[in-house]
Amino acid sequence: GKVLVTGVNGFIAGWVAQELLAQGFSVRGTVRSAEKATSIQKAFAAYADRFEFAVVKDITLQGAFDEAVKGVDAIAHLASPVRVTATDPEELIRPALDGTTSVLRSASAPGSSVKRIVYVSSLAAVVDSRRPKPVVYTEADWNETEPAEVKEKGSEANPAAMYRTSKTLAEKAAWDMYSEGREKGTIGWDLVTLCPPWTFGPVLGATTLKDLNVSIGTWYANCIKEDQDSTSWSIGPSWVDVRDFATATFLSLTKPEAGGERFIISRSPFYWKQWITIARRLLGQPESGDDESYPEFEIVYNSQKSKDVLGLRYRDMEETAAFMIADFKAKGWC
Ligand code: NDP
Image (cartoon, rainbow, N blue to C red):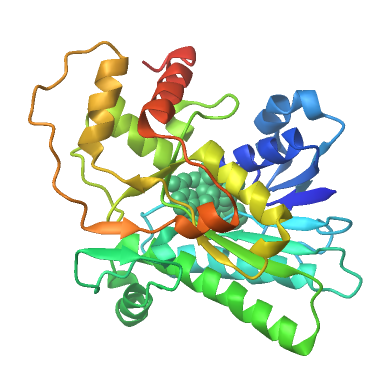
């Protein structure tokens, strides 16, 4: 089979493509320009006969993916802006929302070969800042507060809320198109959405420190350079290893019973201090000697469904940190 992976030059999408290639699939990855494919093509040299890329310059245009979806059996959609620096919410919402509806529409064209679409959403679409704590979120929960807030405040809204709104609106649009298509019998695919937290792990292929994506860049700043105060822009941070997330995507693309389901893909909540302690130990640096007991987590995401339905197993912090640090060392970053 062949899978279309959008934004394949991105951090997570690269690992998703790698997992699919390792499982024997062919992969067509989309990028915004041919130059953006150089590094990932090099990383996949061993799979040159099964990896190809397609340039989709502007994902927000309707019909943008018409060519790219031709002959693929499934789609993993990941291309979306990940940043919290927008001054206008539309900077984030348009590419997230229109990019998603555009790819879903191309997959719905008559004669489409697409059977399954996995949309990579985020816990940003699950967490709701108004819920009293402590709280345990499940797949039934949606971020209702921030989209309303962003709608009301526009460019005065908090940029992190703008990002979380972009993910929420895009996932909702995907479910709406799916229900409508099912009802009318106009689509040949079913939908799975995955909601990951901070996604950590080694960086695939060559890159530079300044080009790190947000999650690895933040981990590096907090745990290696220790030059940030360890607060971050996510509400109730949790994490998952990028390789476990790639496995979850593979399972979501292939397991019949995953069709029509939403999954939280999360290992556990964390305090940045925990990662810093592990990183210092792995780097042979003096540990802080502070009291290492942590308060109970107030925000927890229940990922039992991913274990029960997908059969997913999760790596722990020590293993992920060890892989990241080995990768950073190999790249000369620590
Ligand atoms: P990266 O920043 O590494 O990659 C983002 C990808 O999306 C790149 O291919 C990028 O292309 C593309 N992209 C960004 N903006 C646009 C745009 N306006 N139009 C077209 N393409 C665009 O991201 P991650 O790998 O970290 O994230 C991938 C997905 O996972 C996203 O959907 C994100 O919301 C989701 N996610 C990530 C988490 C994390 O911790 N990393 C956590 C939860 C969800 P280009 O290089 O050309 O800009």
